[in-house]
Image (cartoon, rainbow over all chains, first blue to last red):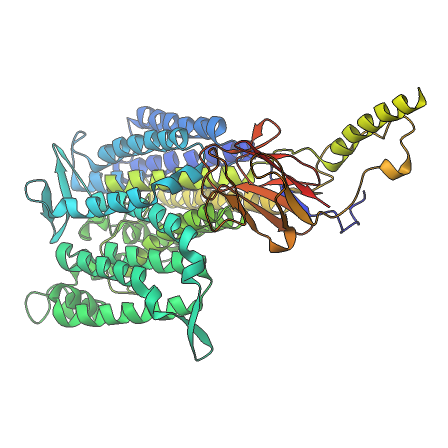
Length: 477
Length: 159
């Protein structure tokens, strides 16, 4: 049986485990994280930070735990995802710490410390997810439970007492001393729900309806799920005033729908519905109009526009910061990123652009690109429909979120409030994204694991030979 | 701290950042091209040469399966041509092979082809699909005569 007998040979990839490569990248990621922390200390205070040993140990312990967990529970998982995430998280921590120093925050109420605690929780949940989900296909059983859970999560902030409005958006709930954005959890649940639903119903939704301009449009009667998702997204926009999440959930559904059915018609229909929604929101809601006006002409509304209310201060300060940073930035401690309101959450990219420059921004964006690429590659090698759709959904949730927030702060698209995954300060987002990575690694482990060996032709033939031999012996006797 | 030192720190840090990115890229590159490519059949351990004086006629058959047959269980004798692939097996009325087996799920398993290799895939059944005594948890290659057990039913590919 040489390699040139195409009749019975099907080339298959045997993926290697690659845990060693992951370890090397993890060490580099830790170097990037702790290096940033040290550079912040040197740049801002002129000395190596006193708590560098404690901080470094904490970070190393967390990342070693994550790596060992992957070694034990998902040995064939993708080797690049975890280091990329660890690196982004490390850089985020350092930049948040830098902004803490600028704000003169004390040790205990510093955002960086809280973020480190959230990261600990994220890594713990990452390990728990890997442990509780030994096979991603068991999640398909919870398709509708996940959908219901997501809706409950989205309704929670609307309830009295526990719901809380911060900066005009009603997306928070109070859990004693901490507040939490249940929408971030809803994001993960929705991806599971979309993937489970579409893995089963994709054949029906792929049926072609009328053909228009070379594109098969879907049938009218199949529009139900899309219309429902569109209505939910609009409801989030109207009731919670959360433009970013609304965009993210709707985009996620259209992407998963398109991948599941391979019909361009869904993109067309989804795009038309989106345009209709945007038009309606523009005419009806002032908070959406403000975002578009400040995007089209940011400097007209700086610091406060002609009408005395509309302000593009945040966006313009961010643009100034990035412009001043230039190619290689001012260096940690030499910029003034505290001028940007919320520099540690939504506007962390301009803060990095100011102090580390375009060079660092490009490196970080490349890392996001690689995370998404690894997610989509997982989808390609996944062996089951649900796994494919799940990893596409998870990867595009990171892609959409990064695009929406980076596009917003750089002035490419209107600004919407979303956190930069792994980089920004924000516990709910960080924890949810760690769970997303755990699920991606789980699907990746399942799909890269070598196939179990089944009895081959030869074994069976050998067995049969023995039986015939016995017959022959009986005859000879 | 002097201006120059700060500048060097900044450049060094950006270099570390990019070294990380390039290292990640090189791992991805080796992951893409470094995987061993084998043949589905060559991936199995090679069969020991047939012992004794086995006549050539009984040497390994290289036939192509044409149908799937139920060999054991209450539906024994049912056959379905493989031309209808993918074949869904289960208790549901939309299955190609409808099993009258209390231990089978509505849509229990699927037999599908990829190239010349046939695969059986469990569709998330409650009681599982077995090859020999091994419960399969992903699409598994099967060939002529491989016994696939679902509940009390056994199926196999036939010529």
